[in-house]
Image (cartoon, rainbow, N blue to C red; front, side, top):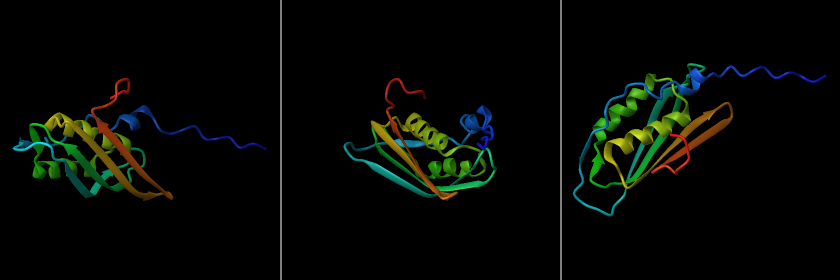
Amino acid sequence: MATRRKKSEYTTFHARTGKTSELPAIETWENQYGGYEITITIPEYTSICPRTGLPDFGTITIHYLPDKSCVELKSLKYYILAYRNLGIFYENAVNRILDDVARACRPKWAIVRGEFTTRGGMRTAVEARYPRKPGIAP
């Protein structure tokens, strides 16, 4: 006898949660040099799973080649801390962080990588790049 799979309980609401929530601004400062890369590692990222309400933990790494401005670290710290009570999926969080960093400092290129702690026997890593490739939805 075949078993029936339960219909998914995930909804469009879950998928979109957190994408447009208001977060603190990421400030910048004027870059004085060229031709160097910046890597920022944030090992204490937390957010909330929008479906289960359980906490998610991970490390966010932002790697970029600055152009005319650089990310100001204190404002980035407050920006990332705002995710603590935000319901958002891993994938959306990484892509939103990339979009917000790119909007703030307009780097020549940027990569945001999220490595999330094991849950349910699976470990997840998500990576997003700026500029985005044409034809891929924002």
